[in-house]
Image 1 (cartoon, rainbow, N blue to C red):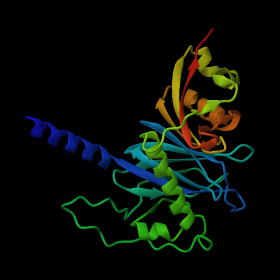
Image 2: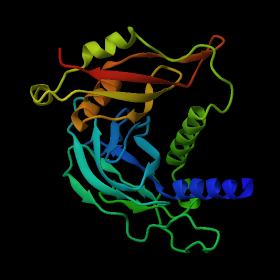
Image 3: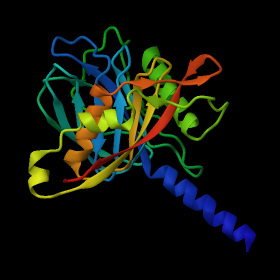
Image 4: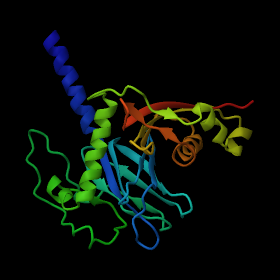
Length: 270
């Protein structure tokens, strides 16, 4: 019985892994320059947020397969929106230009899935130019293998950093002695929240629970909505956490380290 149970758990684990995809890309301004600190979010059956790094790259790992709205924002710049289908076992790339036309992005043609043990890897590859020469694409590009990714060293670094965040959430490695803190506490977040008037009139309430990953300087790196609510409530929480909230980083001894904090934000009509 134990062997059968272990086999079932293994199959469920593999099935869950294969039901996820990856979304990567780069955010550009209207003039074509990379944008750091942009918020890239996907919302659908789940909600996830990545913050673009200094070179404009963003990475979202382990996105459940399905249809999503993708949105890129940066305070003071135009918003970009699109829709995309995430396929299991597929890495898709979407580079966006803030202020550009919204798009409907299907799964990339020729996208290469992670091969199962019984399958042979496909030989198709996507030829990419060096990052300095590549113009911002406007449609998803399938990433065939790690060799292609390695051509853009900064993108590869962004992927590796995101994988480290996954390890952090799995509590692998040394635990911090001081956890991430919100400057001003949860009250500071609630004070910045603007209840969407249409939802308030409709008496729609809810609680959004967000898991925020913070770097050594207290900047948010990624947000996962552990418990999403209404779409517009989710967006307001993301706005406040990325634009209006300051964090104190976790510490080991006197040294700041990356950490994570879970934050519940409640929308209640008085």
